[in-house]
Image (cartoon, one colour):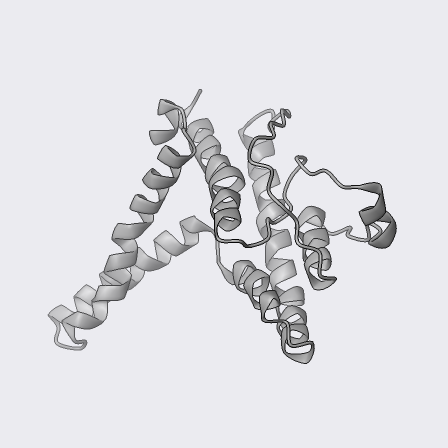
Length: 193
């Protein structure tokens, strides 16, 4: 496959296998994502599907968390599905997902934080924080920009050199996170490109 397909495959492994595995190992709830979800009849009767945004899976998962339901990740489960047929369709799908997540962040973070304090349920702060984290590419771009500006300002004596450390450290650790994640996911060699 193309380099673009390899990148999408690597991102898919990190988001849909590595993150939920790590969350599970930390005792956190799994997020709902994609078509690999299984619901019991009782759960759906008690919490009917009322999520209809462009990221309805994440939206429904947030509603379950707010209701006190903690989805579990089934690491051994395997779900086969057709990927987007070509680059344009994959780009549109990615825009839909990212736009939907941004919408949920704007609408659900305040609600989750308010409910966490109102109901004394600090566990609801975790999904709010998870929603607040931007896509990895944005984080890497922000770290690179902050490091570049910081180094420039430091060189001009407009900023203490130690102040560049957090962004420079992030710039180094993001690729480490990706490589460690790919190793943990037992990713195919094409994913490392």
